Image (cartoon, rainbow, N blue to C red; front, top):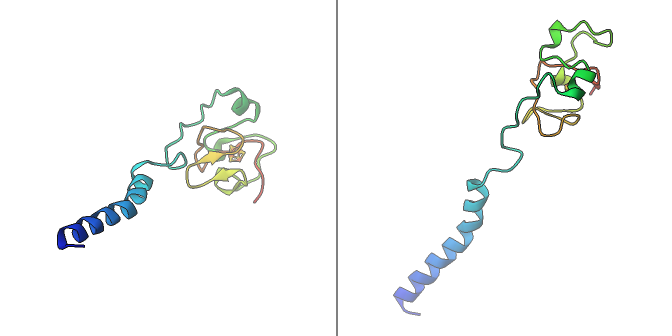
Length: 101
Ligand code: SF4
C-alpha cells in the first residue's frame, strides 16, 4: 500500500468510526426535546385538581410539602408526568394523584 492509499484508508476509517457519533449528537432524542406545558384546562388535569403552584391548592387530599418534584410519577429531567403523556408539568405543581416516592 503506497502512502496515498494508506492515507485514504485511514481517512475512510476515521469517518466510519465518527459517523455514528455525529448522528447520535446531531439528532436530539425525543426525551431531550421540550414537552409542551400541561394546560390547566386539560380534562384529566381538571379531574385531578391539577394546579401549577402546589402552595395555592386547598384540596383536602393535599399533604403539605408535596408537589410534582417529589412525586413518583414525575421525571425531573424533562418535567414529564406519567399521567399526562406528551406534556410537562412544573416541579412546583401538584395534583390529587400525587404519589410518594
Ligand atoms: S401525578 Fe405527580 S407529577 Fe403528575 S401532576 Fe400529579 S403530582 Fe405532579
